[in-house]
Picture (cartoon, rainbow, N blue to C red):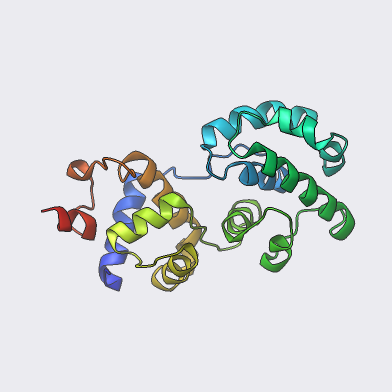
Amino acid sequence: MLNSKEIKLVLNRLYEVYPDAKCELNHENPFQLIIATVLSAQTTDKKVNQVTERLFKKCISPEDFLSLSQEELEIEIKEIGLYRSKAKHIQGLCRALILNFNREVPSKMEELLSLDGVGRKTANVVLSNAFNVPALAVDTHVFRVSNRIGLAKGKDVLEVEKQLMENISKKDWIKAHHTLIFHGRNICKAIKPSCHICTINQFCKFYDSKK
C-alpha cells in the first residue's frame, strides 16, 4: 500500500486530471437522488438517467411511486438490470419515508440504512451529494482503483471504505470518491486498463506488477 505522502501525490494528480468530477446521476433533490442511486446498482449512470428522465416526470413524490402497482413500476424501469427487485425496494423505501420520516429523505447514516434497498454505498452517495456530509462511497470503480493503485488493500467494500477514510483527509472524501470513479471509467477500466497513458502509473502497484 502507498504511504501517506504518495497517497497525497496520487490524489492531487488525479484532481488535476478530473477537476470537474461529480455525481453523474441526474437529480434535483434528495428523493430523486436516492431513487436514482437504488436504480444504479449494476447499471450505468447513463442508462439510469435515460430511465429517470421519463420516470421523474410521472413520479414526483413517494405517494406517486406507491400509486403504481409493483408490476406497473417494473414496466417503467424494465430497461434497468434487476428491475423487479429494484421496483420492490423503491416501493418499500417510499412507504418508510411516508411512515417514518415525514416524506423526507433522512440525512443520517443509520436512518438511511433502515430504508429498503439502501446499503452503505447508496447511503454514502446520498449523504455526500444531497447533504454535503463527508462520506466516501465505495462502488465497483472505487474498489478496483483503490486496490490497484495502493490507496487501500481490502477484500470487501467495507474494508476499503475504512482504509480510504483513514488514508484520505476528511475534507477530500467527497472529491476523492468522484475522482476515483472518473479514473476508473476513463483509464483504470476493469478490462484492458490504459496503464500506458495513466498519469499516476509510476505510483501504481498494479502497473508495477505488470513490468
